[in-house]
Image (cartoon, rainbow, N blue to C red; front, side, top):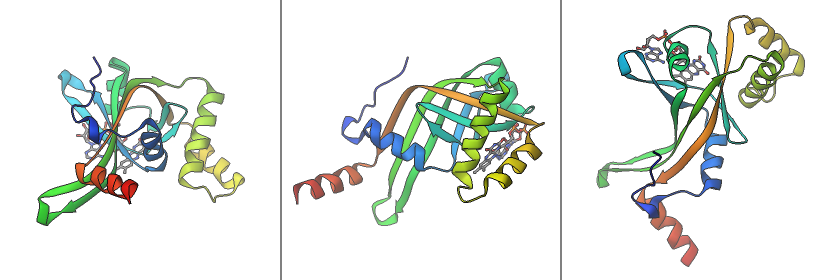
Length: 168
Ligand SMILES: Cc1cc2nc3c(=O)[nH]c(=O)nc-3n(C[C@H](O)[C@H](O)[C@H](O)COP(=O)(O)OP(=O)(O)OC[C@H]3O[C@@H](n4cnc5c(N)ncnc54)[C@H](O)[C@@H]3O)c2cc1C
C-alpha cells in the first residue's frame, strides 16, 4: 500500500531523512481516531535505529486510537521557508508510516524515556534526569513506532540549488 513519490527529483535520500528525523524536535502523529476520523496530534519524539519513541499520558484520544489501531504515520517538517514573491515555500519534510506499540517492559520503557530526555535536555545531570523521570513515571506511557516506510521530499528550488552547488 505504500506509495512511491511522484516527483522523483524531489526525493530525499534515506540518509537525509534520518538526519532530519534526528535533528527535529517535534512532528505530527496521525492515528485513526473515533468514527474513523484521522487524529493528527503534535508531539515530541526520539528517532533511533528505524524506531520513533514518544511519551504520552496513559489515557486520552491519542492512546485510545492507538489501542484500537496501531497503524500510524508521522510527519516532521524540517524547513518551511516561505518565499512570497514566488508564491511558494522552500520546504523539506519527512513522512514515516509504521505501527505503534505501547511499551510494557519497565526496563525497556525506562531506557526509552531516558534517551528521549537526553535528546531534549542533553546538559542536565544524570541525577536530575533520574529525578525528573521518577516524578513522571507513574502516569507515563511510552510508545514505539517501527518505521515501515519512509520518504523525504524537498521543494524543487532546493533541488536546483543543490545541483548548482554540485556543478560549481
Ligand atoms: C510541539 C509539541 C510537542 C508536544 N509533545 C508532546 C509529547 O511529547 N507527549 C505528549 O503526550 N504530548 C505532547 N504534546 C501535546 C500533544 O499535542 C497532546 O495535546 C497531548 O499528547 C494530549 O493528547 P491526547 O490525544 O491524549 O489529548 P486529549 O485531551 O485526549 O484530546 C482530546 C481532544 O483535544 C484536542 N487536542 C489535544 N491535543 C491538542 C493540541 N496539541 N492542540 C490542539 N488540540 C488538541 C483534540 O481535539 C483532541 O481530540 C506536544 C504538543 C506540541 C505542540
